Image (cartoon, rainbow, N blue to C red; front, side, top):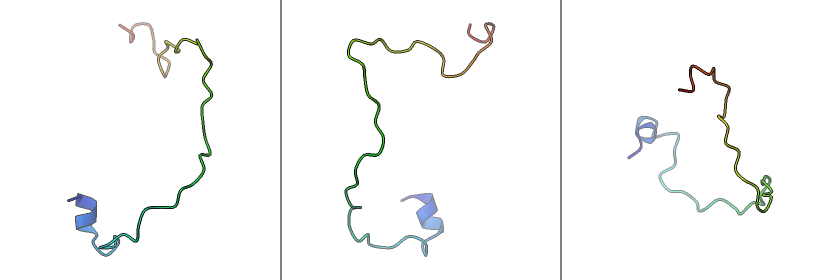
Length: 51
């Protein structure tokens, strides 16, 4: 019971035709063996905000 589906029943079909087709992966992140994860904030913080 998803609220959006309940509020707009004409937009969403009752039965789905099936699973979507298998698509190739268009994005990947190549990992470097032995590399350490980056230990930084994902955005800049003032030193006072880091405490």
